[in-house]
Image (tube, rainbow over all chains, first blue to last red; front, top):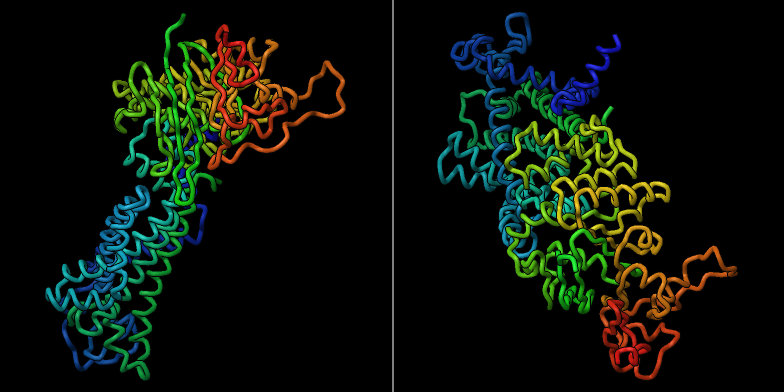
Amino acid sequence: MITEKKNKKMIKKKNRFLSIVFRFKKNKLALFGLIIFAIMVFMAIFADFIVDYEIDAIKQNMQNRFNPPSKEHFFGTDNFGRDVFARIVFGARISLFVGIITVGISLFFGVLIGATAGYFGGKVDNFWMRIMDVFLAIPQMLMAIAVVAALGTDMFNLLIALSVSQIPRFARIVRSSILTVKGQDYIEAARACGTSNSRIISKHILPNAIGPIIVQATLNVAITILVISALSFVGLGVQPPTPEWGSMMADSKSQLRYHPYLVIIPGIFVGLTVMSLNVIGDGLRDALDPRLKN
Amino acid sequence: MSEKLIEIKNLKVIYDTDEEKVQAVNGINLTVNKGETLGLVGETGAGKTTLALSIMGLLPDKIGFIKEGEILFNGIDLTKAKEGDLRLIRGEHISMIFQDPMTSLNPILTVGEQISEVLELHRKELNKEQIDKRVEEILKLVGLAPERKDDFPHEFSGGMKQRVVIAIALACEPDLLLADEPTTALDVTIQAQVLEMMKTLKSTFNTSMILITHDLGVVAQTCDRVGIVYAGEIVEFGTVEDIFESKYHHPYTVGLFGSIPDLTTKTKRLKPIEGLMPDPTDLPEGCNFYPRCSKCMEKCKTIAPKDIVRNGHLIKCHLFDDRNA
């Protein structure tokens, strides 16, 4: 019994990853968010096994328009008689994919630019941040519209448009968190050990500045999902009949009065995804900080 | 004569900010021999830390400049060395112990990782197990249990953190250790332990040390030679015996000793040195110390005193001008 306990303690100490998992598990809300998000991801990946894309999500069936939620149609049917559940399931693919990839790309470049600017300061800082300011001056929506209108409406252009417009936000956040960590004594101490700049940034500064970056990233996934919806709404995002949560809401807004579930259901899914990502982000931030251990 | 490890010649450092030019170090000459401990004593703001940072090449970017002088370390001039070369010297040949152990450890890396980082950087030939073994060895040397290498800094007490900091500094067995007030943030009992340990380790590794402090007691306990620093200059320099036993002193040194309690004589009050350090942006003409000096003469106000050396005991004061002959 005692050895078992000791072993457990050893594992907890030995393995960085396990100790993060251990701390994350203690946060019940974050765990709940993770479960919700896992369900969404599962839905997106295995959509083909859950429902049939062509028959349930795309094919119009005018006899079955506006069926309220029932046994055959969990979430009812929409104005073309398509199964809303099927469209939600397939919509998860696009919404999550675009949301995560966009944030991934902009996070990568944002961290790179923000870290360089914040760490080296002076001219480098000015150069990069002024470029970022230029991008920041263009509203995200306008930027996306401009790119998509110029290059054509396909998924790839959409991703570029959304990513580019988010880079400055990340760059700013990263730069400011780096500025606060840069002045700490342990950074000076690391330099006194002969650590190179890139190693100081990646090993000493970024892990200490990760909190606000994670929160911003999870928030931005949510924002991106909403922006795609808006773009789809003006006809520049995902093209009908492809199911996507935002465009489902937009398409059904004229039915809000008599068939509110058509708007509410995709709305709930967007909301759940956003919320689960936020609590995951919060939980992750706490779990990554060893000072809050146990 | 033992071998010279580092030689500082006429070093002048300024901090150039938008508003003003701060003259932090004004022509310091210093040599440290192999295996020797040199103490630098002085008030806050005397330029002791700046001196240490210039040796490390870590003066604040775009603000701190070495205006003049050379720092010769094993024949290499550190003031002119490239950043990449300096990086190889730092940690490997020269390492530094910072003042505050509470803030000089990275809070999110385990102490083991922080010690092994120096080894990874400078001992590329070692594999992971060898590094692990070495980390445990070093932890044992500084008096910590090797199992604690997987703990984070916040799980240690102040004295233990300082031991970790020392472990990091000594991991590569450097030739020169710069200790910038290593015991200031610690309480007195721990201070004694840490100093004792540093002394032992220093002799085990045959490391030279520059000990920066404002505690004369610490100096008496650990140093071979001592420099008294005032306003960016060394005003008195000599062996510990010269500083503590000799009859002749710079008035500033006399003032320093006057401000520590003496148990053998009965005094009602300590005698602090009147006034403050001169503004380093606007140093007085002549001797830097004259505004506070009790023995100030007319010529002190206009002519800067020269270094007067007798038997290796240096005093920078007009009072001893006649001793030169």
